[in-house]
Length: 171
Image (tube, rainbow, N blue to C red; front, side, top):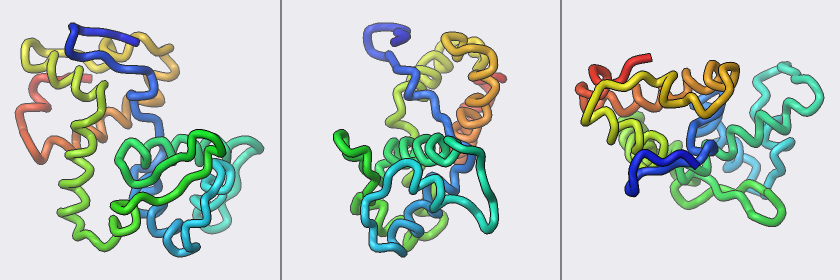
């Protein structure tokens, strides 16, 4: 756990890791609702999130399902059973697709503000300009390169809520 001060600390898990924000939000919620939310494993979620004839290498469906399930859980759209690791919609996940696009963005922005890593970034950025790559230096360079676009996407989703964010945070 990295700690900036007594108030702000985060875990590696708090640095987002996904391939498609749409897959982790609207598409996953709609797909689970469509099949009556039976409780799926990470592999089953990965298969569910395949688009058309898309195939993945062995083990990739598990990782894709896990990453997108954990991201959806961070947004409060699903819950993951701690014992079976089955994925289920939450009440907000069940109605998420019925919200307007503006309401979805507003909800996601509020959910992102609960993320400990984003809180650390914003807290530090209020005192001095920061460089994202350096803030993520607890990760290996290859992992930083994979996760950096996700952090930037979170910040873009927040940017509509405060233009000053982009001036204090650099790549």
